[in-house]
Image 1: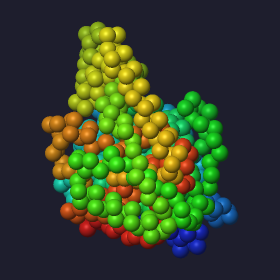
Image 2: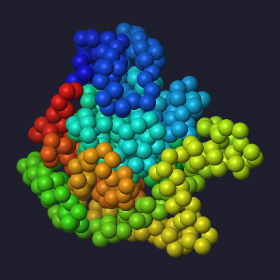
Image 3: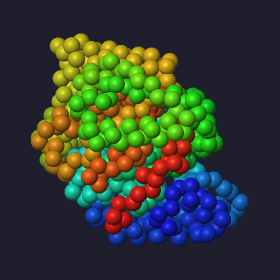
Image 4: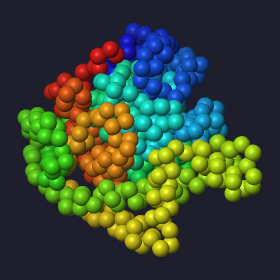
Amino acid sequence: MHQMTLAEIARGLADKKFSSEELTKVLLARITQLDPQLNSFISLTEELAIEQAKAADARRANGESGALLGAPIAHKDLFCTQGIRTSCGSKMLDNFKAPYDATVVAKLAAAGAVTLGKTNMDEFAMGSANESSWYGAVKNPWNLEHVPGGSSGGSAAAVAARLLPAATATDTGGSIRQPAAFTNLTGLKPTYGRVSRWGMIAYASSLDQGGPLARTAEDCAILLQGMAGFDQNDSTSIDEPVPDYSASLGESLQGLRIGVPKEYFSAGLDPRIAELIQNSIKELQKLGAVIKEISLPNMQHAIPAYYVIAPAEASSNLSRFDGVRFGHRCEQPKDLIDLYKRSRGEGFGPEVQRRIMVGAYALSAGYYDAYYLKAQKIRRLVKNDFMAAFNEVDIILGPTTPNPAWKLGAKNSDPVAAYLEDVYTITANLAGLPGLSMPAGFVDGLPVGVQLLAPYFQEGRLLNVAHQYQLNTDWHTRTPTGF
């Protein structure tokens, strides 16, 4: 049962081949047995899962149907879940139980999805390796000595190891797409504003976006359908009709114009990954796509701009965690200043402290114009590059990451080296565009992803291209040994 995709589970439940309760118990047992190797979960919600599964079975018995009704999933541990620990991978929130459900959690629960637990993540979503979590590093099921990517590494590792069929995740600079590439999954970052951020603990508010992680584009379409939509509680949510993503999966790729930026194939890209990307291009050409070389001239400035904007927003967002109202509080503070300093010093890990300090510096009176304002101007140039490119092509294709997953600890002493791994993904966040990573092959036994980008609100186009590609390749069907 654990090998089934979301789509297969939906068909099996509809045909009464098994119940949601039976499936849920199988997966909970599997998580208990195998997750100690991976550390992909922070919290298991066994009682809630059984309760939701029984409720889903009762709804089906009463004639209800739906692709997510009775489907087991997990939530990245920055989506607030009422009465359940929502830690954000941090000691700061280890004792925090959210008093309400995030909109994404509430929408998926209403659709009948069963929550198995909360997945591990880089602390406050800051990282590309899932090594900054206060609960310990997550391991990549394809090679337990390697990272699964971050910050949604727990969700990715759990789905890749077949502990569950799909999970929610978030993407601030590639945190859905990069783990998807490292673990042989399909991951989608929707258009900024397509999925509500209400109840999603913020890292960088103008960049964060929730989305699905699953094994196939078909499954991502199902999960996104349940997540997407306007939310009046979120001022950045966009009131745009949500199409039927599954209905658009059968469209032909004949005549589809695919742009390949020349800047993607620079010296920093592993040549073996470059070869796999070229193979993917050939597959799509066989399906009728037309390839065109394009240019994104300001891509080289994206990383420095991102690593000014994101820490600046983080320094503001994380100022609320001060030991006063909720979260970690130091023992016996001498006064209010001591309470602030020690609570934050003890509650935040090194990577979070580093980014808060960088952000506070960039926003300070003497440096705001030189750093933050200039970074925002570069952000606009990056967006303009994409707008010009999409006048010529329908989607943009390239590598998701410049290298395969590295060994645990390999980049801990050089955070900038880890930041550079985001070179292909962060531009979509700066511009607010939808992006998808899909499996494209292996290098030294480690998965590699190909990234697709599309104009605003064209998630259906990305999902269709990925689905057509997956109908004609089998990379996405490969399973890590031992799982």
